[in-house]
Amino acid sequence: MNVFSHPEFDNHEQVSFVSDPETGLRAIIAIHNTSRGPALGGCRMFPYASDEEALRDVLRLSRGMTYKSALANLDLGGGKSVIIGDPRQHKTEAMLEAMGRCLEKLGGHYIAAEDSGTSVADLQVMARHTRHVAGITSRPGFDGAPSDGDPSPVTAYGVFVGLKAAVQHGLGRTDLTGLKVAIQGIGNVGYRLARHLKDAGAELWVYDIHQEQMDRAVAELGATPATAEEILLLPVDVVAPCAMGAILNDESIPKLQARVIAGAANNQLAEARHDRALQQRGILYAPDFVLNAGGIIDVAHERTDQDPTKVRAHVDAIADTLGEIFTRSQRDQRPTGEIADELAEERFRRAPRRSTATANKVASVG
Ligand code: NAD
Image (cartoon, rainbow, N blue to C red; front, side):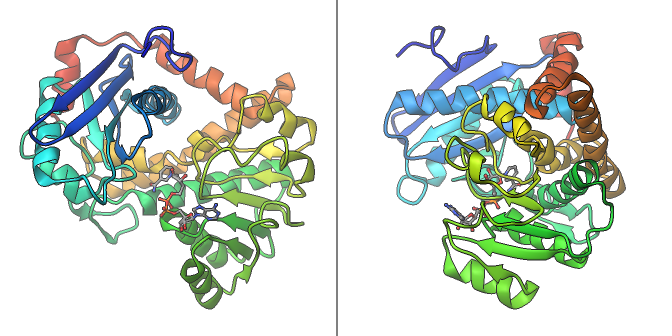
């Protein structure tokens, strides 16, 4: 298996393959860039079909975290870890403890957080052996409600903030009353986004592969149920993808009727070129990694000031970053995703590279 010549390898600073035969742990930890600070990113557990698939995922996701944190103006770099295995079958406390010991050996260059296949409780088990985990402290949430470390409420609020900014720029309106929004995926983030939109007066269409999620949105939010085939293609103002990636592709883009795409799902563009395809159709795409940064912003504050008002102000600034992206995109007639990447690169490439000592000091805060 090639690493340096892997298509997803992007001059990652460190890629560690870790194993613990006694517990069955096999994991890959990728640190993409630490120019702005220690690499923080989720620890995912997934039954990858091959080591190659796991490597591809961790290389791609860790790079994404560098861009996301830089655009969110956080003093953090980008990293990610993947544990190879089915979380429902293979996850044990001993395995998580072994992962904690591996994280500790990296000395704080990488800090793990919750991700798909791992929970706050799992991270707390890892924390028995390392300080280098995040998103595990109970504290007042950004909205005043108690938070157990689940990033979804903050992520959903950030997506709402970003969606409003996109609507203002793309449709020239600040009042969401009667705004028609189709949401794909009514899970932790999608449902909360739907509630924000409902409270702001928007009209909702929803689709989720799980009927009970749909039923809840229909019963509690007055949403109109849609089918899998039609949810992205409805004659609405905004499509908010909140389920899975690669849904903006050669098949869907020519048929989209919405003028704005703004949702939480990671990697919505099937390929980078689809960014331009959307622009050519006059559809304003709010880059997903700008919109869904609320969770990482929250985790970053957990490690420093833990002040809910600061978290909220920081998440509100997603609108300013998007404004900068939209303005540049319009000025240069270039797609928004390309501009977002460029802006992130300006931010992390110009940051002075931190020494190990500095990174460790930052990592030990909290
Ligand atoms: P979730 O698992 O709680 O919700 C996803 C929902 O999508 C589920 O209800 C699921 O049934 C539904 N779904 C799955 N496949 C679908 C399909 N083909 N069509 C329609 N619905 C489908 O996840 P979440 O935490 O709400 O995250 C949603 C998206 O946002 C994911 O892409 C995630 O990576 C991204 N994201 C989440 C966070 C966070 O803080 N939770 C942060 C950043 C990005």
